Length: 422
Image (cartoon, rainbow, N blue to C red; front, side, top):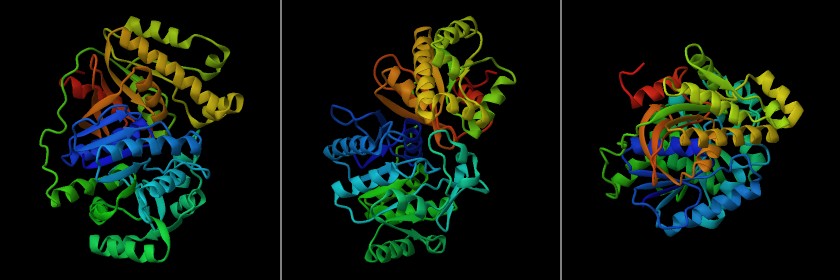
């Protein structure tokens, strides 16, 4: 195995695995830290559900994943987090990066969440979502990780005990050599983690090339675009032409959505214009109402003829009202548990193809279904591929970060499995 990655949520891990497959690396995503030997692959991504748990727990889980990946003989390690740097002043990006650096004996690494293909760019250390600063985007209203500061140097410094520095875009655009020189200067100045600007795919390739000698890289999936070529230059990797091929999975289809991001709100609205949906109310869940049972009964009446959507996606003002009543974490846990139960009931009813929106929701659903590993397939939209579960009866799963995908993502994803169908 060449590259071992640790993802802080399930959809983000799939996003990274998708990028590596596009680079010609045979990639497997495992759910949680495996107990047995590593699968045969060029890269393995260990998907954790550690983004919003206590920092101490996130560190412990990440170090367990690192130990397993080291035992598998990985040559380089990657800590993957969201392209919108989802975190709080308490962590978890900084504490996990610090801990990984300590165990690996690494004095210097980078932090680069940029993903220009999806509108995430970093300039002078500030993260942009499209034309907006992160702090002015929909992320400012995120129910669990509201991002009120776009300056990543400041954000990460509040989380990390390492000194945080910056590699500016004017160095990056001069290519890998200039980036490596800047790395060396910062390390001599005592910087442990450097935020790296990136506004284009060319920047990402330059950064990836410059990271060839770093034992640990941290960032979003975008910066991984340049890593496969490093292994090819060393003669360690042959391009796998069919890395994205998946076996066909037949069966009924459904969409589950727990994300309340701006992008997912638009996708839910687009679906509901022409297709059926059932909305979950967290306040009713808190009262003990069996909404999972109601949703499953509703779905079973329709699903033979139409793919259905079961969702808790809501606008920011409704999310605020629910959180004021229940609290952010309890409300989220109620929704995740309900959607996980719904997923199990749908699979029992013959659903074999699931689109799931939201990182926390995807984690809950995959855990409830007992999925232990995923083969990574073709990209649906930037950052989101189809996958097929490994072991047992196969399930086709599209695990979508809340912020990703076009307006028609749900229908587009399902149409990829049945070309020519409406």
